[in-house]
Length: 204
Figure 1 (spheres, helix red, strand yellow):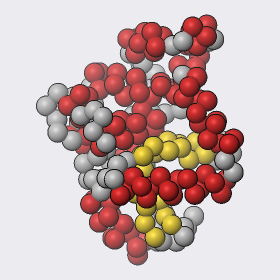
Figure 2 (spheres, one colour):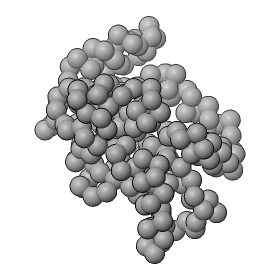
Figure 3 (cartoon, helix red, strand yellow):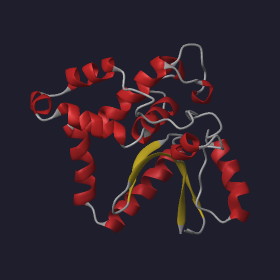
Figure 4 (tube, one colour):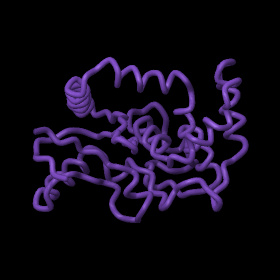
C-alpha cells in the first residue's frame, strides 16, 4: 500500500521537534526522513511552537477587516464574524499548510511573509507574521472554499478520493510541487501540506 508522506504542522505547533510526521514503523523512518529531506522538508515549514489564537494571542483586527473586504455580498450578510471566529478557533493548520504549499511551489516567497528570510524555517513569530498566517487561515471561511471541499467529498467515493490523493501526490512529487489536503475523521479534521508519496505499510 502507498504511504503518504506529509509534514504535519501540528507536530511543530505542539512541540519543538522535527516537523516531519510519518506513519511508518520505527525501523523504516530513516529512509522516509531522507526522502522527505530531499523533497524540502528541512526548510519548507513554519516552526512556531504552540501557535493558536486565544486569550493569550488576540486576533489582529486588520485581518478581520481584510476578510470582510473580500467577502461576497451574501457572505458579508451571513454571520461573517462567527464564521471568521470558527475558522480561527480550529487551529492554524489551514493557514500554515497553505503558506507552505504556496512558498514551495513558487507562488509567494518566504520574504513576502518576513523580510530578509530565504526559507520558511527561518521565520520567527511576530505580529506581522501572525497577520499573514491568520489571513490565510480565515480563507476557509469563504463560500467557494467550503463548496470546493464538499464537492470533492460528495462527488467522489472514498475509494475515488484515495485514488485521487495518490495520483495528486505522485504528480506533485514528479513536478517537485507540494499539495494541500484535509484529513477528516468523524469529529476531527486537519489540514496538512503533502510533499510526496512512497511505498510502505500503514500502521495506527
